[in-house]
Length: 435
Image 1 (cartoon, rainbow, N blue to C red):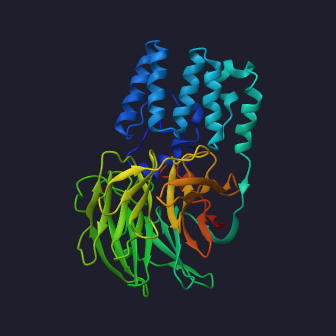
Image 2 (image 1 turned 180 degrees about the vertical axis):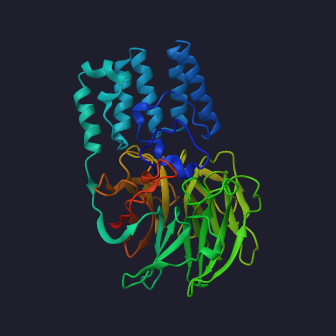
Image 3 (image 1 turned 90 degrees about the horizontal axis):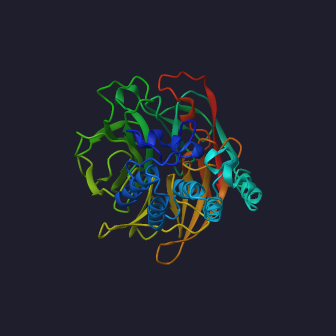
């Protein structure tokens, strides 16, 4: 979202709303603390920053390397290791850290980072710069599926039912749009429903229901100060669009953003919270959403998807990677990313067979990622299905169907650098990517 992505140098209140700003301005990062990172990593970053300011570069490197043992695919960490090694006149180690950063597919121009300037005379410098430049070139393929004409909102989620009817979550305009099979676009929800910004949608065709995760954020049109941080789940009749009810959270006193939804086999609705470190659940017949799992290890929860057998729940965490949660025990553990990938900055997450499909809009370039799993549910390989593609610069969550993943190419977050902006209507592009 927004116009740039920095390597988790800072976090805003509505992390899901604002964190697309957190990873692309990699060059501008200082050794600052990721406020909601896992505590051990955060402490190591803090200690490294303190040591560096005191001129104790060896101590700073020791702390950063300890952090890398915990988060080896953290792009910002690799950059900081390179910078501190340059300051310590360890050119070889600095280049090795940059090699690792290039290997995970990150794109930036190291020649524009003053802290790395002393490396320009290193024999490997031209090849390093070439690798980062190559990462910025288009990879894979994304085909335009259709266009939503003249939209002035933020289209955050796109899903479809078995009849070819599409539904779109609009954060800015506090509504749900539907596109009929003949291409007709109309508003599915009504202003009478009292929605806030719509961040997520899940379809339960078996029970004839549409679920929406709604929340207030600065980008939501006409959201009052009193509404900020409020969130709830909205239930609709899928057939006729009738608003059924609003289900409140069991802990409404905190700020919340319900960024993604997933349906369990028993009909339960699971929702991630991008602000509070909670996964919510609406059990069949329940009158509110209850906290299913809360953990101070969580930073900013995003997409979630059940494994094919329903025994595991995979949850994207923008500032940590991907959690694999055993449904029976509720025990979370982080997936280890392959050496050529990072799992930071993942937004949408879907499961198909023994593979995950992810929208990764928190790294440069943005990409659609396929993650193949082994029999134990661990990540085996990661492949960029589409990256650095034209018009795929503001990706948002999508839908899996018939061997393809449909994704919003230009959600619109980058049009609202100022929440009060009034950008001209533009076409919204829905792309499909072959799995």
